[in-house]
Length: 168
Image 1 (cartoon, rainbow, N blue to C red):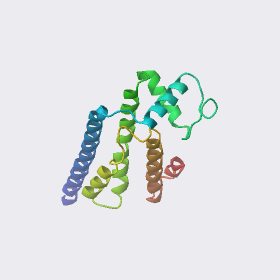
Image 2 (image 1 turned 60 degrees about the vertical axis):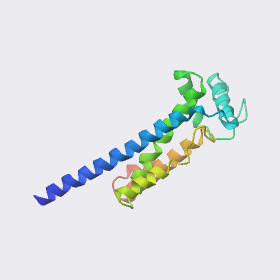
Image 3 (image 1 turned 45 degrees about the horizontal axis):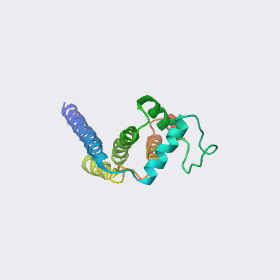
Image 4 (image 1 turned 180 degrees about the horizontal axis):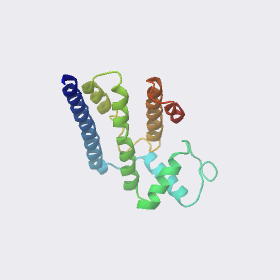
């Protein structure tokens, strides 16, 4: 019977930690929504223009020069077709994608440290995701790298051979 009670306490602690992480993500999201009073920086305008050109059928690397990887051209032009070709749409979608970094860092950090310090690590991981951003493209590299690292950790913990497949 005592093991059952301690299991409930453990689940309550994990649930509280998860709610704390989700709250941090919501605060991050809300704080960056208030940051739209900033002007437009050069890189932001260049990226938005490239996504508009892609939305109109032009291809990166062929029709115009592009420095970054191709994954953002699968995501942002589609979002702009759905919600409009505006810089606000790009900023909100960037904030949404960047907020997924928080739980990924938390789940990774939780494997090696207590919940409080994992929460601090998750919170500090988003400090460098600012709007207006350096570029809209790097968030996908960060998300991909963290997701692959999480899958490798799951494989090393012996949970699933399929995790190694998803790690790439």
